[in-house]
Image (cartoon, rainbow, N blue to C red; front, side):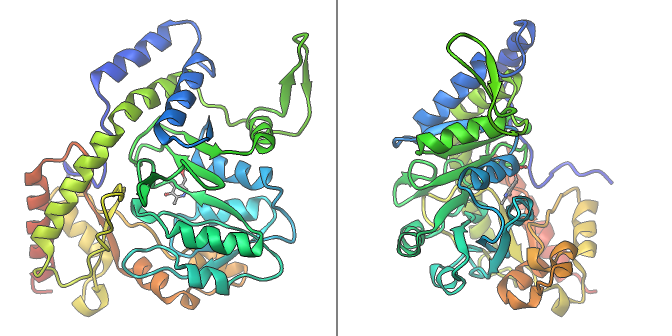
Length: 375
Ligand SMILES: *Cc1c(COP(=O)(O)O)cnc(C)c1O
């Protein structure tokens, strides 16, 4: 059984590959001029008066953003129960407490009212997640944050190239963290970035990123903080430079493919399609809900049947509050009914820029056949 149509696949063009070879031959392969170029290119791309720093992952970026904001013990951070576990894990890692909120069933995004209801005297920050590349209602989130004096640390791992009311995610706001993992809309293999406006926090971010080390005017090094080691290599940054030039094209192609999915599935599919969003949606994932229990089919059986037809189907994500770690900490998945249902019923269908229109046809035909087959 071979999967020839996976749920995602990165697109790496020959010019980028040639650029990487040049860096490999240059004699300088770790953090250097390519990282500086990539950071400048990201700043230009995002726009706004922002400074961008790149690092080895979004997980690292989120952790550093929390540390730089001074969030730790006795702090609560509001985070959706429907996200990748990393969003909540980093809150625990800095010693703070994740406070989960449920999401909307169709957008998979947090609703501002639910965020506001979850605020306690210990709340220090909100971490909105732009699920699948659809922007959260950031005006409402920033309004709540201003009224309650909260920091806003955006998990924008899905949202490079996403716009909210015509403004790019990462061009405004507080701390905004991106991922360049190979599954995301652009890649550096592993990688991430923080878009920030605060000069003071930027200094902390840089110290956290690289051993807490500085070099003074005389060229002597000193260490100011027990920083970590999250610096991106020039090899990875060169991939990012090539990817960023193609990002808008990648995302436009994703939107076209999703339009086709809607055309082919609407009225014929017994499950639940996601919210369509607007033109700002970057469609990192195309996830549909399938009522497996009613169909007498398990999700692994469904994935197996699709795999037999050569099609890879992902799961993004289980309800975080229901994962063993969080259950052990006293959280209950059932407290977040939409996240629980999405976690149970979601499947991610193939979506990546190199897909052909006929691939979408094929996925829909096979999907409907598998679901209609007598069990
Ligand atoms: C992928 C992802 C992350 C982590 O990104 P890495 O770059 O792999 O660390 C965090 N949050 C969400 C929502 C993600 O999808």
